[in-house]
Length: 192
Image (tube, rainbow, N blue to C red; front, side, top):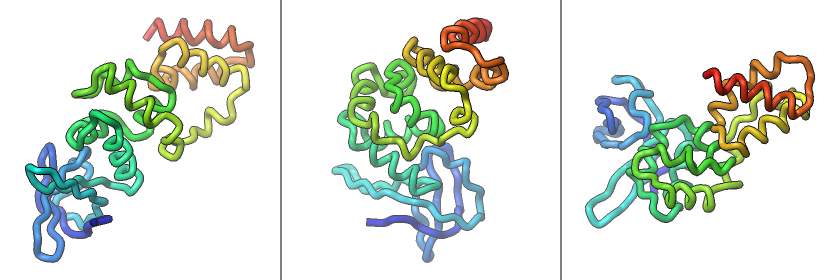
């Protein structure tokens, strides 16, 4: 029903913000309420969810975050509170990358997400979140053998965050074979 509300942030709490627009204070639950500042004018992208228990507004900084929330809601077993908790615990890029790469174990760290729900998230959303994964200029310019090595690390069960931590160090090394990069990456990962 609503796409966004524009007004003044009058209150910020750990779970929600209050946005005054047109003389009405809207209580909007947000994954990132502290991204806003009190007394600032803000445009908040909102989604209205109607349940038997009431009508609730969920708000996001960007249209893309709102779309990701809606995609999470489309997964069986994920409700608005779970979707917010998942988005609050991780930045959008890392979350989308984890889903794209099928990192079920990584997704189970979120509140209320067990192995079954994490598998369902991957099943339902894998391949549908390409717009949310930022293309890193560093990765596009890497040698093919290093790109292959990074994919292999993901297949070995390393998370995208772990891989991203060692990528800059690997990129500094002279061009090597994929096997050589994997050995060096494993050595770096084991040190951390």
